[in-house]
Image (cartoon, rainbow, N blue to C red; front, side, top):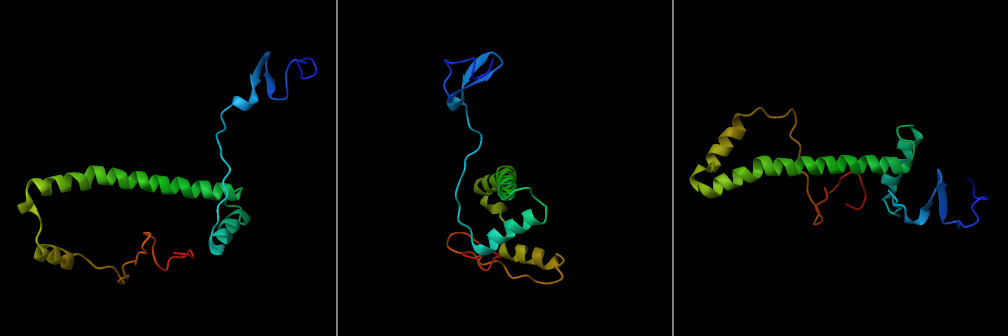
Length: 136
């Protein structure tokens, strides 16, 4: 069956086997977005594609979002598995909390990294100040 044989089908329809389907009612699995990036980030995306690391700029963004979502899942799992139970235990028995002197002694006994790195400064929006991307 072809389009020419099916006069009763409109352009909104397609034929799959012998069954007409409504193309406009099919669910789309992607959505086009327009985003604005700082110049250095846009150039980094283009460089990844130019180097052959990714086939398209969209795939660079997709991969970055997959990594971000994986990190979010890992943080959520850590919060549920370790932080929440520790908080609950501390609330139930405040006397079990470590004292400042104990924490300082523990930190002093642990090996220090080869170089001390300054703690990152956060902006009011929670971004790391002075990070590689502009606008932070």
